[in-house]
Length: 474
Image (tube, rainbow, N blue to C red):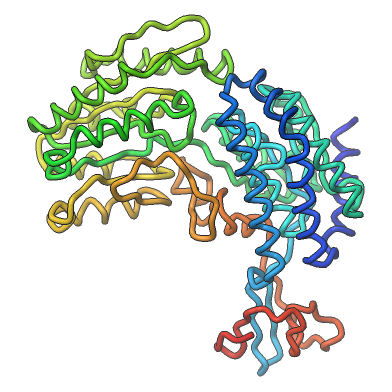
């Protein structure tokens, strides 16, 4: 089927879907979750064959996927997310409304939670937008099975036939989808190269559109002195687990571990190396990611200022990798920007800084990140407040005394950050706030009650929280 026909169908469906009452949209999202659960066995089996991910991980991701569908259903049932504002004198009223058909690109590393029925699709459908999903080529059968679950939910819920559509293809297909005049927004999780290309396509349109691209991160972690002195072994175990989780194929993988030169930092390096050495080789998602990991790691190790930590053994085979750990200095990473780039996989770079000034300079030199963490005691925090101050400017999520892997689907979550972690630091791709990517504020001035949406009527028939004459009320 031609992309033009698909996008025309998406626009036609949108004209109906945007007017579906919130409670019916919520029931639709819940029905998608039910249909996914009914297909769990086939989905997990197929995804395992296509991605090398273990069954436990895939089963957990199914739960995450249905959980976020339910959370968005709950959000639109309650209704206050539309941010209704009413000024009675003059008679001006405002709320958030859906933008139109959007395009979602499936992610390779999360075949369920960030792909066909993942967070981008769930949040767009909750907002009232129709969705065209471009399935990821690394797991096409999984994507098709998930789409069949959505199709079944469309029929059962009485939604317009083309509320969600599914396409496959190469980068030419992706470009066609982005530049089509009916497309009003794009969701993407993947490489910086892919995200930047989509942004360029969107900017070249006669009517530019937003691309909400999450493009990765090195997720710097700062280890403050007293924390290392008192619990380096515990921290080594924690970060060995985090670095190797899912073969390091998480956008929140801790890739840069920063501390002061000291016996405690040296001990931590040795303990982390030993912990990593104990882990088993893991298969990566697909040969392309495997090759990119080996190439990226080799480029980093080619620098004369980087040494491989002695503990991990680099015995790669055609499909599995062992984790690796490298060491450099604060001066070296300041002089060589390439050392700050992401190596997507089970690899981390330790950075030994000579003093506080150099450590802060390293932090300030980094580009935008999804996460940044600090391992600290209360005494550390009292003496190193500057670290937190820098981290707040650096990332969308700042973590104290925990590893960055693991992103909760909740109202407070921000999975985003300054460029190049994402293309717009004001938004998140995880959590219920993700719905704000697919809406725009619309103001109704001097409208009679009969022509207003329920959310803006004086009687407040939906019973939502609203800002009325500068006072929150329901």
